[in-house]
Length: 238
Image 1 (cartoon, rainbow, N blue to C red):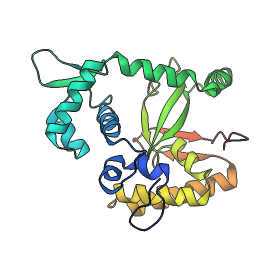
Image 2: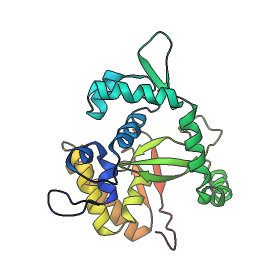
Image 3: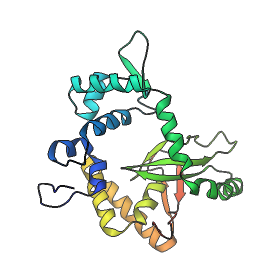
């Protein structure tokens, strides 16, 4: 891997957090820029951004619109995007679903934890979820819902901000200090105005984890939504 402008070799998390900038500043023969652009375009789509046109995608990725147009056309041909009839809008196609299911099937912790999550959900009469970090978000890998209409229902694949959710705070609190500080800096860059409050909440979450073994989010992510989380630490991989 090539070195960045400071002379340091960029780590993979730096690339994942801002791959488009990495494309412009690195000259790494092992890094295929066209693939990175295509995957970043797919990442623009979400539950809140289900339909996007080339102009919107260009704004979200900072890629030139002609480049976006060529890539979306390719992704349609490959079955990863579908163009809505009589419009210039695109949405995800089933090819992406196949990739997501394959990724989920590789995570054995989901099936191992499921019966314990069910038991906890019955005991607490509350939803129980398992998530992992994806950049600066936590993405649901498994969730047990209750019959209560008073709780939020979020499906597998949903994301929450790492800094304001209990599971995100637990993830950060359990990290090595160097990795956590790097992510703190990334969160700060994305949330300059709110950073003093975010930092104070994260520092409190770390103290809670050190003192009690869990982290809380009391209305911080969404008003009237309270949650508690603990990190699951793999004995070999962390």
